[in-house]
Length: 423
Image 1 (cartoon, rainbow, N blue to C red):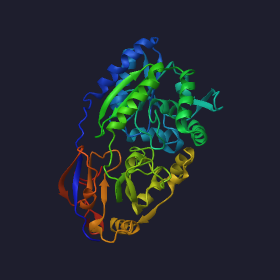
Image 2: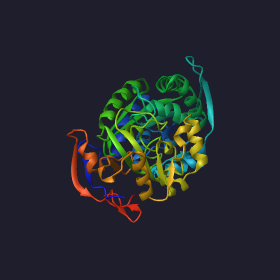
Image 3: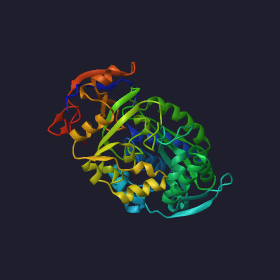
Image 4: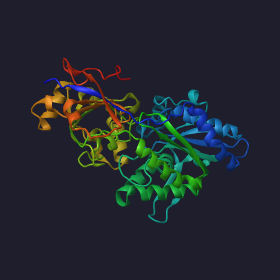
């Protein structure tokens, strides 16, 4: 393969990040809990999801501190649908991978999968379930990151309402609601189910997180239940402006070093790759990626390779790391079987890149428009070939830097990603 000359590109957008995340989480949540007038010793369930949220351990620790300041007793409930193989032990293990343990948080974690049936919605007749331990608690605090969703676009996407519906719904609720999404759309059902739950289980607050383009904690805001919807709509607009993007209309090849549930619900964020969950259509207009090659499955994903179907090529080591039972459970619960189709499996980078560029119709690699990213959550710095840079959108947000050998092959494998070996 011809050497591909490349340079580093940096996203220069500067957004303030919160230094004391635990302190900020406690400070913003405490006034809302004070207005909720919790009784002394009340047991308060705090939701803990499976996404790779920056400093999630600190966020949850701060939430627990606020509950204690209110004179109540916090505990965490694992709220991640069918992730972790749909088992309590698997979900506890996912939290541990994210740095969330009883020791790091200072609170008990409940990760069992049983639910109570709350009732049936009027609009679409959906049976609504809630985590049994959360439903029996004296109060619930919903914690979630607000960001663009990978599957749909709306005025609310990923955030507190989704965590209320799908997170608290556990595996059985997630399956029901995703079936309803297929019929009536995501946003109407998320709003319907979350609203139904907020009226019937003891949710007293929502703690929303917004991250910056570098994966830092940019904002933390707490809301009483009646203010959650308006707050989330506003924060989604902010998150959309901050989220990382690739400033290209078209690319011949996107190389993603690592995918996983800790980076995106679809393993690779469709808002970054441009590809919808079916792997064939566009989630967003740009970039249009001709071929996509993914190299690793993160350890934090525990073998769940949901989103592998968005790729055209992957490595043998990634394919061998897949837990198909957990992957199929997640994809079928989400009613997205296309998201787990196995792409062409290659023994090493040389073959994958050669085949990908051939499929893209690029006879000379030196002229290929190629970008390499660590993962789709961390795109503040990425690698772009000279041909890609020549076609990069004129955007003052991005600065082209030094040459890099990150698109060069050492024997059959790419040179390490700039900045050292991947964690």
